[in-house]
Length: 442
View (spheres, helix red, strand yellow):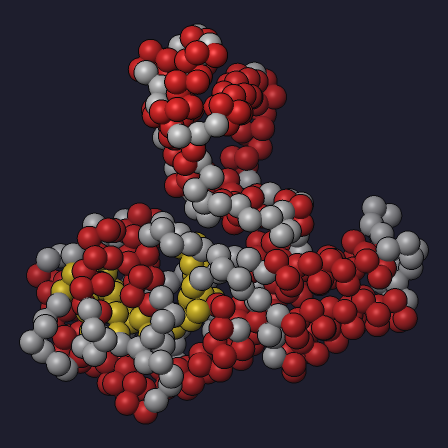
């Protein structure tokens, strides 16, 4: 996420290294690189220029703080401006009505239908809502089937009418059905097109007028950069939507959409899609995103994701096993599976301060844990509960069963013992202090 932009901004700040004072000359050199980085990220030229002008205005004349060097002060100024550029603070969705109605809009291929399911799961889990999905895409082949699959994955009902070809009537009937089923949230999935056209705009405008949604969201593929911003403006002129959802932020995203869209349409980015899993939808926090763009990580979001997967009963069970030296490979596997549920591995690593830069150019496979699962799966139940039984003969048998090299088996066992040791340390005073600190970050 934003790897190229982060790298180029870091390079821009190198200009100030070694200087004891911020001057017009070194600020100009730095901001020239910053502007170039923004333009390479597909940020609108006018927005990039206004951004660097604001940074320059704030930077010139400021004394270097005792604990900061000029580079650090410039990073602070740029971070504040990036946060402002992306909307300053997180903005929630309006769920005041019963049922509340959310209208989804966007072009075909933006991930709108899948995002509809992700949003339903998010609001079902976080806001304790009872959603109903309404299939209003009557044109795209298998669109209704796709929404049905998504609805099943997230455990919510769907309203469809394959005989009706008027999406306005389907939307209204869907809201009526939600009332019958006592659903307090309706999410309407609409048709997209490969490009903005009059038919698409008239249709979604008719739906919008008929159902008067509490919330209208525009879903856009973040990988399309400045084109996404232009499309957002076209939809906004017709719908006056309430917020934006950026999808595919886990891909090769240059960042132009995230950095430009708020300024162009003056509407907040409310959610971001960060992976293929249905849980991979996050509230958009401008300050946290600014931190990540500047290589500062996002520890708060990382802790929140961990807490979402945290099972207190399981944790107590694990703690007892650790205290009695009974922590086994099944427990190790359980911990790995919880980590996997947190999302894309490279995305998670990027939330740790400094790791984004360290991982530049490194490909982290989401299936990196598969060989561990295969190795543990090749062990006998006794071996899983008694790791000390693993002599060379057993290791060779396990390697053959898992289809892995003996060195990989040894490496996995080493990782197991390291994790066991770390978790035992976490039970001590320092561990409790760290956990308390992480709780305070919420």
